[in-house]
Image (cartoon, rainbow, N blue to C red; front, side, top):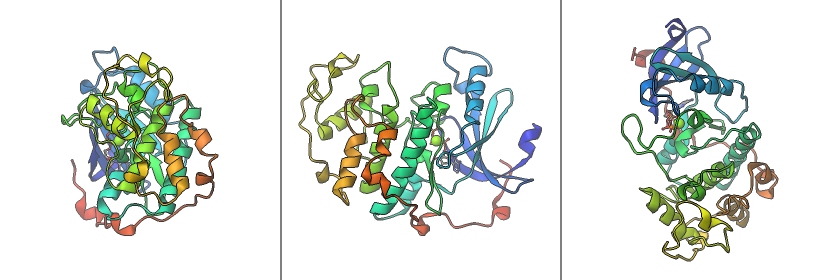
Amino acid sequence: MDKLDRFIKLGRAGEGTYGVVYKAKNKITGKNVALKRIKLEKFYHKGDSEGVPPTAIREISLLKGLRHSSIVELLDVMQTTDKLYLVFEYLDLDLKRYLDNTEMPLEAELVRSYMKQLIEALAYLHSHRILHRDLKPQNLLVDKEGHIKLADFGLSRSFSLPTRTYTHEVVTMWYRAPELLLGAKMYCTGIDVWSLGCIMAEMLMKKALFPGDSEIDQLYKIFKVMGTPGEEVWEGVSLYPDYKPTFPQWESVDLTNMIKFHTQEEEDFILHMLTYNPSKRKTAKELLKTNYLKTAKLTAPEMNAFPHDIDEDSSWSNV
Ligand SMILES: Nc1ncnc2c1ncn2[C@@H]1O[C@H](COP(=O)(O)OP(=O)(O)OP(=O)(O)O)[C@@H](O)[C@H]1O
Ligand SMILES: [Mg+2]
């Protein structure tokens, strides 16, 4: 494949649901890229059972047209008979590893700055009628200047959401909105807002807010904190396919017992995102108007969380 020859693989950047991600360098421009390899035979496009899913290629190619400073740019899409290669701009670190590599919860201004960028990216995606559907710290990439970017947007639309990764790891449900867990067939942009609410909590807690290990455990983890939802807080909740009148009844707890908020504004902001009723949950566009986000400014993260620049020429190998 000639197009692939343009890149030198420098090493592995990570592993995802659909395959391996390599760090690579464009030989001509010298720019680093993330090369995501997707084995097609494992993940058939909805309905398709054989060969390369042309709809997936078309949908992904559409994503090439999207440009936003807080969305990882999809530079190119390449295809062989059984593999799809996606070329993305390269960023130093994902948020999961940033959280693992730092000891303290993120500072107030860094959380605010990150949330502003993420909500802006979401408002942009949603205005183009694209749902991310799989927001989690591993899918948010950060750099040393303080930027944070959404990765993997729209990919989950082209492939059905698998329950296991290609290496059989369980796909996380920790960031999944309650309406999805209740079996909603119709859902909207609110699912991404819920996920960002969970991620914001994780920036402040340094651990996941709702770390469920099965769908029902996920639902109960949410209920135990936010209270078991009834018609009074969420009109129509009892109509969802997987709603059971026999759900254990928990009272909501004060979030301040779990999360050490810097300010009241910060707490109010997270509550807007973790609102049960999807039609009452604020949209990304509405969230951009809050006072909390108005004062946000680019804030530098902790430098020692980033990998030391290793001599790239000595580390490259042909994988
Ligand atoms: N553009 C990129 N720049 C640098 N590293 C990246 C980039 N894209 C992905 N990675 C790294 O590779 C890892 C795996 O990426 P990928 O998005 O495929 O998997 P994932 O986020 O674990 O799963 P999913 O496919 O469900 O999103 C990421 O968590 C990140 O560490
Ligand atoms: Mg990802």
